Structure formats: C-alpha cells, structure tokens
Length: 219
Image 1: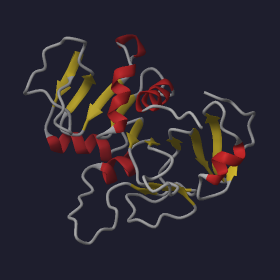
Image 2 (image 1 turned 90 degrees about the horizontal axis):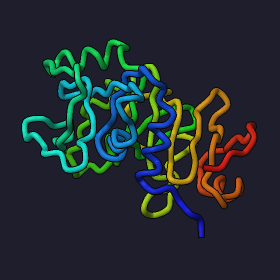
Image 3 (image 1 turned 90 degrees about the vertical axis):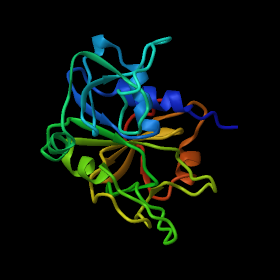
C-alpha cells in the first residue's frame, strides 16, 4: 500500500519552499494549513483577502479573538507590525502584482498550468469564484496543493481541464499527497515523490505525461 502525505505534511512541503521575505496569500482550506509551519524567524508575511497583512496561526492555548478571522472566518493571530485595511485595498494588492506567492486548492490543474478550482460544473449549484481569480492572475507565482486523485480515483493532474477555469496558464507548482510537480513549458516535471512510490505508479495516477528529468528525490 502506498503511503501518502498527510494534509499536515502537504502543508509543510508548501511552507518549506516559500523563501524568507516573501509576501504570501493562503487560500481557504488545505492551503491555510501552511500557516502552522512558519515561525517569526522564517520572515514570511501572510496576506488574507479580507484585509490582513501579517497573519499568523494561533499559538497553542491562545485565546482566539472573535473579531480577528481570516477569509474563511477561522480565528487567527497577528505578528507584531501586522496591519488591517479595506477589502478594496486588499484586492488591489492581489491584482497589482504585490504578492510573491499565492497557494490555492484546486479541482484540476492542466499540463499547461490551467487552474480549475471554483466550480465542479454542477448546474444545480451556485458556485462563486471569490478571490481565486484575482490571486491566480495577480500573484507572481501560483502554487496549488490538493489530493492527487478525486474521491472516485480520477486524476486531478490532467492534460486539459474539463471544469470551468479560474485562470489559464497560471500554475507554477503543484503539491499533492503523492508528489511535488512543476508545471513547465514541457508539461509536468516531477520534483519529489513519496517513499515507495514508483514512477510507473505515479504516471498511472496522472492524466497527462510526466517528465522525470531530474534525479529522483523522495520525501
């Protein structure tokens, strides 16, 4: 049986690759778990679209402030020097190229970097793209964190997205419970794989060709 990364391990892999001094937005759900893997010494400044710069995870036992939440309405803390601002100013930061990274969840990512993360195409459901579209086109780099397969074991990494797009050609890197994969001019390039997983097994679980140019590195 293949040993997969846990949600915390996926978030840790995301956090590890963000360099010191970066300004980062973390999407709702799995991406925001990366917040738990940074310390003040990492000097990563986290932005939330509801108007926060300098967001941090709550310390163990810290009493949450009901008036201080992230975009998902989950309680958070603030680093010294953090700031609050109007929603419109927050979106101006997102759209204006002021964020070095954004980390988003996704339903699908294509080999050309197309991102589908806001709708499953269900006409009976009222989906909303929220700020994902602004982040996808405004951030300097877009990283995605998601499970490698859907619940019915269909690949989320695909040759072409079949779901409505959030952005075209925007994704730079994908973290899954099986691997870390870069999106390049030549398609998907595998950077890391979980221990015990073979290249053939990973390819079998991916809906587009994988490139293994670099020396294989397990995590």
